[in-house]
Image (cartoon, rainbow, N blue to C red):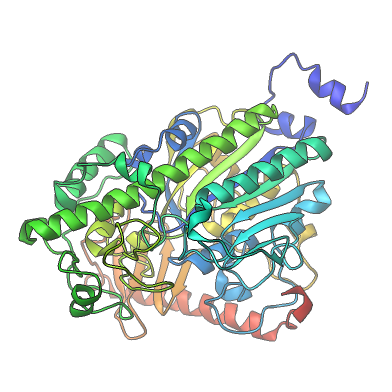
Length: 534
């Protein structure tokens, strides 16, 4: 009896844990949203329709304390390499030479028999196939033209620019390629396990969505971001996702690189709002304009959710769903950025169409990140808190349960290797440091079971943080003072304990500095990556 016949003779019953992995290694699908807030999805207390994600959560587990790096590129680098971005300079936002020993998930999985596929956004300093080791890739590198990208590649080779009249939409094209990858795998490599990295470009600005998806939210969100935050906060507490208070809006905190309020009114119109002010202070024109923006943001997420459903359907058709570990994440918190790029903004174009260029803005971003403070690019909780759904019928039996283990994008690679039966210390390149993360597999069966030896480290645009246990220090910019919070009771970061516990701040700040110095030192001492691999 061969191996396939043995697996087919298990009478349809899936073995859990190590037994399953011994019989057949699990497949992996890592799904990444772009600029989606922690509480946008329904299964995280949100008001956006996400029935497919909700279905995965209902049959899997949801982590309440997963962290990104606060920005697109560094998060992707951390997820794919298993190192903090400062260690590898493998994202477009970390300067310096890329160490020769940098490897990506496909490099680790290939010796274990896996095929690897990529579809969607890329945004790191490597080519997906030649540099990162994917067998096939559709790379969508123009996230600012959701209907008409000028830069996209298949297997590292440029594809023609897309016209607005071609019927193209980024999330749908991404999943078209993902489904093609899976069909090809089923036809040519059915006995091999696979890894699919599915990276969406939504709901990253500019806000663009098919009109039929926008129409699903006709008349919704009229109550504004204040009411939405309050309602979501109450719902999330009831769901057990949070136990903290709801902080006040922070209208005076804005990214330094965005358009001024005067520029917003001039270039977009009088309905635009540049600060997270109380909804009651807006004019009727502003309220309608802002309501429409949230409808488009929601439509982008709902379309992504529909496309996720197509991937799940394909897995079912391959009889692969039961033994496929699906994880869903967002690369950072919702964005308060307001700028105009790409083809500019046509005031006469319908909002959400290819001719418009509008951004979510700080009011709705605050609502999307409920109940946390601040937004993308900051390392307060609103910028770094990510949903994490893990769905694996063969191995996750606590359907619908929550996991409160603090974790980070650097934990994804160690988790996949644990499930695939690979030792990261044997698979990583010679001369490379140990991976930054740890396996989350223990949490698949029991809450608060992940053992960490090092604090969680954050540094983006000199916004700095360190989390050790429930204590977190965080600072804004190079000169910002360290703040201290007890996240066990105050994930909203409302009660700064720095003045009361200066010794704790000093000790944690010293640990942060030591980690930051070490990561830069190790990177700079390493032999640079050969150009042909980048």
